[in-house]
Image (cartoon, rainbow, N blue to C red):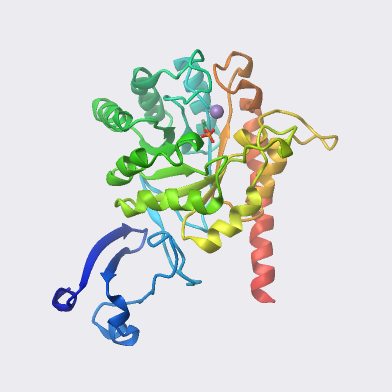
Length: 350
Ligand code: PEP
Ligand code: MN
């Protein structure tokens, strides 16, 4: 640091990421970095790696480095491009009874992560907008009761972050929260800056449904550039009639693309991609098929809608899986994951 301070026309920013085994310190040099010799920088004490930043995603990008570790641990759960976690849960919180049935089913199936929507961005202003902060106390308390460590929860305004923090405080922090940026807010830059400036919670950012992949990856970079590199990128299908009869055009072929371009773990959301419980003649629902397609391509997280009584769900009932389908769903994910790991081994040995 003393050496860096002595350089003219170069400033630096330091960022730490806590992994399981070690804490990674990244120092970003800004200014006339062309004047610096890579080998010399590498020879400085404590320097493990020198990377010349080549593309737009300065913090989250891979910059041509094949082995470029980037992982984070949150509330006992580790996320990187090799891990896989399922976040099954309610699209929208409706009643405490449904939240409890959901969380009980998760615990019975060994799950510690879930999704629970409290703030819902809706197409119509007359539709149910989510219970907001009113439901947070019972959602967090029930999470604690059933051993849930992380709840993915969308925020649509910066004030929601404070509401979540206050409710966690009031209930004694029974669970953790992963803030979610929805597809409608992918380019809400002021929201991105607010969510990026806090480092209490990791962030799941959905790909914008009508913009390019590059634009969505830049949106993720907003979070990291503001100071929060604990970002997961979610594919959730693109708005296009070419995807009919699915709700969105499934884009899970981009899982390996995002792995290649960035260091972010990649999530898939089969529910909002497909949007129905339609089954093909083989007996598998399209939701299950596309989940397997994403997992066999290396996805690191699956965000999926379940509901104890889909007919009574206030949001997205038609795409929700039933609680007694959870064991089947998890087994199907396990099969696809095993196939993915075998494929990786096959190509690494060849
Ligand atoms: C959601 O996950 O509840 C949601 C609204 O998703 P999206 O932003 O992808 O539409
Ligand atoms: Mn939804």
